[in-house]
Length: 161
Length: 161
Image (tube, rainbow over all chains, first blue to last red; front, side, top):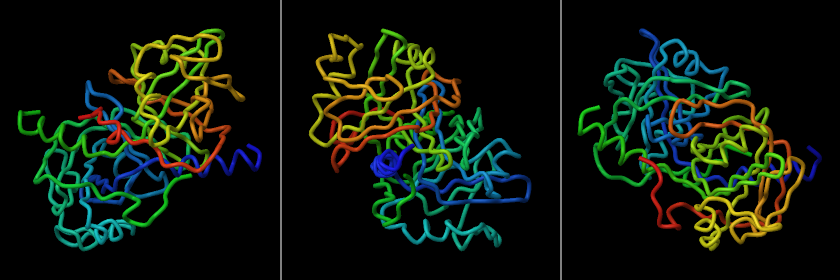
């Protein structure tokens, strides 16, 4: 791309709106969770969700090894949880980076404070880039309360472009 | 999933925020364009974008055949364009469903009224569901003006769950 197209690519991709989520994966005793924003549904039947996951992360390794993951939806106001989960995972009892987690069918960590979550099994990925586009089928979900999603914009962070 | 998990899956996936875009593909003289909302970036290097595309659509067939596509970003206020492009593509001269289009490197149709667009070549897909998660590498982009993206919420439409 020339300089003009490169600049247009950057500004245009930054227009895409995002929510904030915590992706969790467990490989045996190895538990990882990380804040992510590159998320979209990609099918109704079966219900599929795509997530962009950094390939050089321990989270990605655990997700690949287990073939399962959980996605916790963060609520407006839960900026502290998002920022805590930007850091490498440190598990202490039933907390990861100081945030209490619980598990459901897959065993992947779900942030207890999150108003809603889905979990499931990986059905495929496109791993061409520095992040892999991981697609998982939602096999279980929980909604604790109605809530407005925390957005990347509210977080004051740019991740894209 | 049991009934409770099914309901939670639906309400939770509906929390994901979306913008509105027009996905375009051209296979020879066969030109198709359709409004889509399931879009996320999935990598920086190379810049990859994932789009959920209905597999029984002519748009998907043209995208598969050509291996390229364009994604026009709609602006707040361009609801009429989104609704026009929900219908099957009818091309008349340089218009599709009454909306003027232009082309760039890939030949895929770009909505002329759109404030910004990207185009590129398909690098992979996960086609397990009723929609395929198509991942393309952005190889060209244009930004005509700064604009706020039209959101699915502004459109008053739900597509997800």
